[in-house]
Length: 245
Length: 245
Image 1 (cartoon, rainbow over the protein chains, first blue to last red):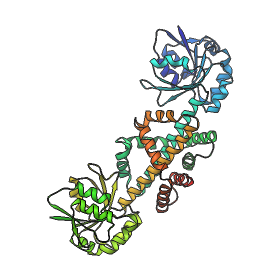
Image 2 (cartoon, rainbow over the protein chains, first blue to last red; image 1 turned 120 degrees about the vertical axis):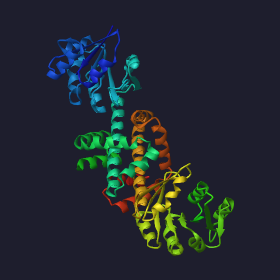
Image 3 (cartoon, rainbow over the protein chains, first blue to last red; image 1 turned 60 degrees about the horizontal axis):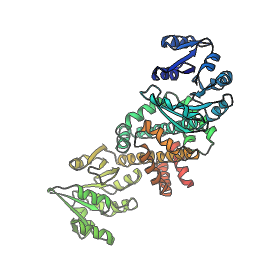
Image 4 (cartoon, one colour; image 1 turned 45 degrees about the horizontal axis):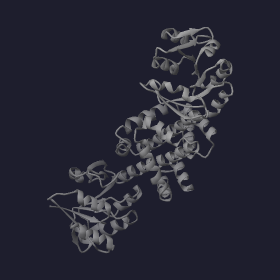
């Protein structure tokens, strides 16, 4: 029997708990110091509950940290030392933070869920020396080992994010320009000829989603720029654009 | 019987001549002052040949100017006054130039073929007061009237070009970044999840096509910026990027 433990029982953990169904796997977590909402979610789910995260960490073959980017290092610092199995970090952290976390745990795997987590088969990219021990998850999701280096999974997620956010900036700029001349519909129409029939829908959903969160997107781009350095013209322009709103 | 005359017999004119097949349409052009290559192309095609472009202009119900962007104004100046029918400019000109051309001809239609011309049904966008007189072409190609304003067809083509060239710049930047960490294949792979299965092929063809013509692309972006003004962060960043190569 394999034991998988969660620290954090938010959307990512709950989705994985629902997805990975096997008679040979037991899931555990703890309600220790958790919010009322989380405790309700834990009770609703029928996951096995231990008193403390220390126990969760020492009992798990795979310990999944999925709390929040800002708690990722503290979680590793507090519970990593009790973890005898694999420590899989799924928080949305920078490569530098992933590296810092690996200083507190023995068998870390850097993981990034790319795209939505609540798909039939979500996409999990992992890197780290022990990453191949997670290959059995292939039964439940698309798992891809990038390399044995901590940081590669986080880096890939960051590069993807740099691309998609800059693309949103470009879409906003071009669509606004076309609207200035009352050519907005035609802008989507001519681009659909080469970019695919769903160009309009995909673009509008991207534009609206971005317009609702300029501040957060510009903060994320700022972090991306400080990690990768400042020779990224397009990402920098997107950052400048979002910061002005 | 309708008569369509060509000034210029390059790829655009030849494609239209091959495409628009009707017992009720006669095509004419002239070899006057044309290059040897063009004269060969004219002879090969069995189009009807008059001695001078003045005659072509005065005989045509629709006169199509498809020479080159830099000859577009001179062509209008020299032959526009003899044209009693529609003057359809299909040169890849800026909206300002389209407007200048309309000063030399009475019934101008601003036209832009968007995408490839040698498709089964190419896409022709037109604007201008007499644009609807071209709707009969619908039998042979996808024709779309934008408005009655000279310049709208050219503007739409320019906005599309601003978008696709900036997208190429973003692809080059993001792919180079991923390659810096040996994550090039994975970059395409993760983006294919949301951008479509052909993302890799489309992107690589765009990247290679752009890398072969940085100078020309940066000149085109420079023209786009001087026409639309300089508040286009993303287009400007693409221009800076291409100029550095």
